[in-house]
Image (cartoon, rainbow, N blue to C red):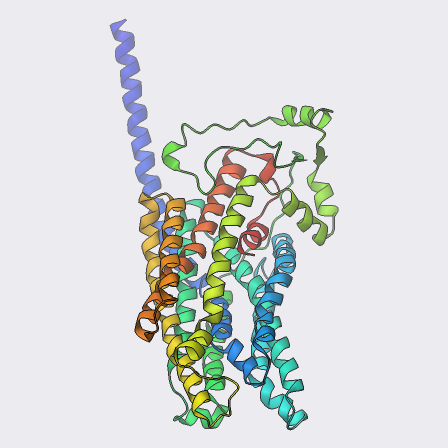
Length: 488
């Protein structure tokens, strides 16, 4: 008996030594791989710079451009409403098309480039629309109003889809354990794009030679930021080869079950805690169990094979996958949507709020009047508040990489929402521009949170339910479509 126990102990020691050696080797390879991957992710995430530029450009100049051609405030706010509504239906379809794209040029890049070009051209139309309209119909703003309105609507619609595509473009290149880093880099680059745009918007270009060349403050900012965006987007799509999409053959059938009857893992509404993974349980059926469920008259679920799904039109595929989204994804979508509604309400009206309520200006007053000068000064000074929130979001995006190791991501989301809610309330009761800009800067916590954590959580869902648990509810789901669902 003693000899047997000694032999077992020796074997256990040998196995332990081999395991430690394998762990050390894999750790070295992982460190080397992570450095190369981080460099790649940094380059790929440069495309996020342009995505945030289009949003910030609208936040700073969208409403002022419309008000200067005498569009009423009720109409001036419609582009973001129209773009959000169209994007709600169109973005998932475009993202699903990118999921299925098998071009040799790449899976996401064709969509990224096309959407970027359309958005940039549309913003150019909005920027120069006033002059174009007056040259066609002197003394009348009707054509100018139409051109600016259409330009802003198309630019915002394309930007909604662009942000989903570029995020999938970066997340595709990251392993499951680097998704927080990937999303933090996207947030950081987006914040840099916002910082650049708001900085250029806060500078008074009217006394420079650039105004004589381009013809105005807004045009100078647009031309400078456009050149930067074109350069960074080219670097992002040209430096690394994106492998084409390889279709996988799924032998199992997807079961269309309603959220009420589908069993799911009770890991929380927001995230998977690796520390409690041992205590979480999930009931996973084998292929025979799935066949039994499909044949069961009690379940009344309809089995759908991969060949059937691929035979559907893209629009119907998107509808089916959105209709059958798991409840974990539904909860994540609700949380993200509430955050985006709150944040968008702030950034869209902020500069206009400062120009009218704080500086008591009038955007439709004559250009040489004091009221218009006060409004322009308010918009310019208000843009520094937007600059503050972009700086805070850039810093917090990098801090979140470390915080996510120690804190539950759902609590991080709740704390960020609480702080920004208090800051917004303070802005309603003060008239000092310094205090208001400080409170506006705190909105960067909310932006960095909703622009990062929900998608990191989504990546953990994909890894857990698709790769580990082989959950049929998540079968056929790809990053592109699910990102667009969470984002829109």
